[in-house]
Image 1 (cartoon, rainbow, N blue to C red):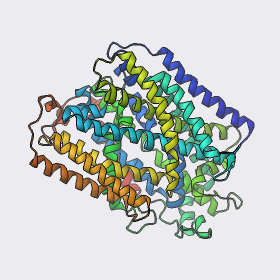
Image 2 (image 1 turned 90 degrees about the horizontal axis):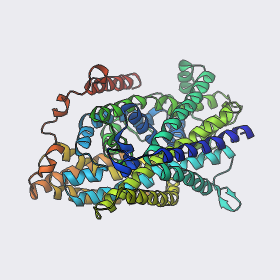
Image 3 (image 1 turned 120 degrees about the horizontal axis):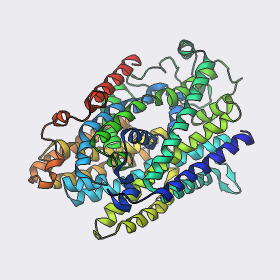
Image 4 (image 1 turned 90 degrees about the vertical axis):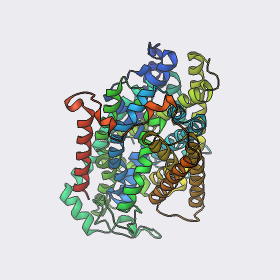
Length: 559
């Protein structure tokens, strides 16, 4: 990295912070929500392009660039299933969940659960949502961004700077910068910076893919190289990677595949994770809650679904291309020190001066945008679900002050929690394992809550508490290597158990549906399909069908 590259990185980071601070100055009171409504939900003014782009930006982090390239280098395209399967769950958000959220006019999803069930369920979900925002969203983003800086600087794992662990030093620095503009600007700052950063992130990722694709000589040459050479890591002493690369371009894998992601594991396990993440997680769904109207709330997730096509080609594929380039000796015998260094290796070995700095800045931006999104959702949860709930007369200005204080505290907690991801084989494995232990009870409660009138408040609370307990047991068993099974199948089994608990307890403790919950439950599963909202391509039903066809076609092509 040249001084010019570093200058680009520094100027970019300062520019992002400045843009977020500027959003704080232009933030004004909204007629539709007051100061608090504008700070937490951008005054309910977001349209579908902004919602879709902001959801995509909140999802995409440095973990995608670093860890998807890492998984691509080790296992091929198979981890791209986490990107393409998202398209199907975003259809569910558009068709079944978004209209109910808009109907209830809630600021948080725990608030939605209280209206559907009771306060106990709201409290449990608020705690889980805070955990996911701080640890799963922010923690992993800071950790991977710090790993990127370590790789760019050429520092070995465990290296120190002035006696301080380099990785931890970078985590603190990035966390503080993100916390500053998120605290001052609120959701408006998050959306502004996300829009800019996502565009640069995608441009940087596309550049890496195009350059690598050109150097390998196209798809046919890539497939031929992978089919005829062993994996580069198979020659490393003591490596557990002893397989070839002939199946690297296939998404569906058989049982016993080294990736641990057999096709049936994806089919059964992903919906458990995906429905929680895309339909029930405050950090992601907050953009839908801030929609201008139902039409925009429905179309925004579908626009995001189309954007989710590209990560397989611009985040996962570069790792596969790197394998092929190493196999043919393109880097003159050089190779990534570890699979986790794949993306930074490509940046430093393939891009010219200037472009290196731009792409590296885009990677750091990806981490910052995810952290800012999680910080804002954390502030919203604390302000509305912890304070406003217990102090109903709390004013809008007081809520904003609480939100800002929460942003500072959330940043500190994320910095402390981020090193947990160094425990796992890959960062992407770590984040999805944590989700697989957290998601099942929430997915069960939301699914049965919106589709089954007999689901009761007591059954929802029992399901959440028992499901979290089961997930905690599974986490401890995995963490201490007592048993490490297929985490996707474990997620599915936990979901089945949670749904069984909820159904049984609903019959054991029957309760009539509350009058205020009548509008929050679908009478029939096809009821939301009857509502006309837009015409032509702006009709959410047409767009949902188009999204479905596109993703099915992709799976048939890359099966």
